[in-house]
Image (cartoon, rainbow, N blue to C red; front, top):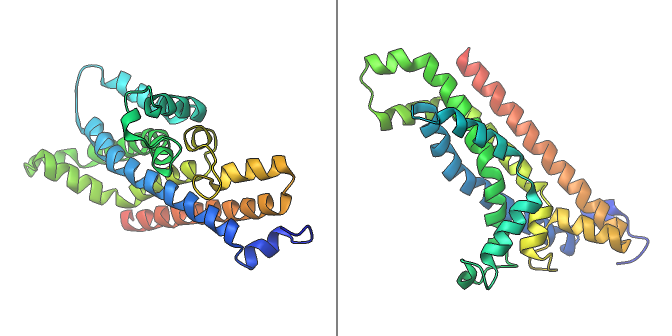
Length: 230
């Protein structure tokens, strides 16, 4: 890459190396966010609508897992997927699939905890009405999830933001292989250490733009939910 090429030039001219990294990062993060939603929303709804022994401890544990250290998650997934690990036969260590698994583990507690709080608040509001109408458990969940759809989308966006900004776990399980498992965050760390600042800054600009867009969408969905509630 020529020394006189600026970070903005790379972004505006659609540098192939930069956008290949961005594309992979978005695919991995979006896959992890949707996988986390598929697991976390039903889990959060079940906890919100269930009464069982140790429920408070489960909620405390779930909330605590929102702050899981990424490097620890990366290490656990690495050990599980390594040749000597229980899932070594899958042969997916140092692949995008391994990165999706690590990010899903990180994002699922966030989506589940936010979903539980949202659905539990709605359940307290509509419990008497749904009980009087003799709404069954599955329809009850479906009703509350639909009513909370904008807030749940906000939770999903929060999970995607966490996945997109993650670096520790994906380096460990992905290996930061050029053209294969290199994401925006891992590339920024590597290119900065190499002194390739234009590419690092260009990726940083794209990452900031993505974060701003995600937060704008979250704000828009919250506003939509408030208008419907009003």
